[in-house]
Image 1 (cartoon, rainbow over the protein chains, first blue to last red):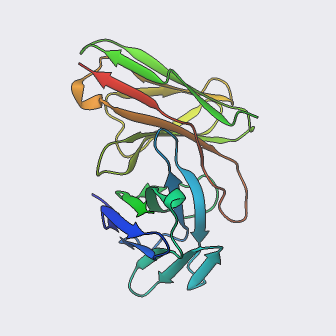
Image 2: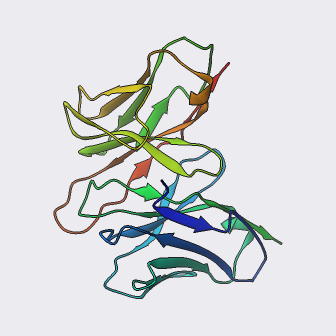
Length: 113
Length: 115
């Protein structure tokens, strides 16, 4: 069963727009929520991550919003650029280092110039 | 500093053949993982290892075996390949840290087709 559900499956945004990708999880024991970015032909790479003791984390143009009561978290990409075109995966895990990550299905983002 | 290196990058097999995928990391990480990536299904954990000589099953272990004889290497084996195992396989590694979560570092994948 899919414990982390991600939407939308694909997203097309104009340059300068805001990209929003949503994830919902089921396991309340999850305590670490990373987002990974994957370019074609490459492996995923950590983009940004959040723990449930904060509701928002911002790094440059990338922001994670976290709603613990709703068991949802989202990635916002401000001022989207063509170079942001990639596949984005949300994930969740419990415990400290070495914990197994459960990934969402992925969102293919295309930013048109 | 190469990070995580996977070999081979591409491979075509016939049904019933066997092969081994090799993952090597040079970051002295304790944890290593094998995932498969299929369209619309994200990354699913096949097997993982928390240290040299130890392995454990992940979400989709059937049809695969693994070994971690050396800390820097994690091998994924397919004993009798099936078309359902056509996928892109990713290896990842992460370090041990008692506080907080350490990111998983991924290789660039092995694209495997089973005919």
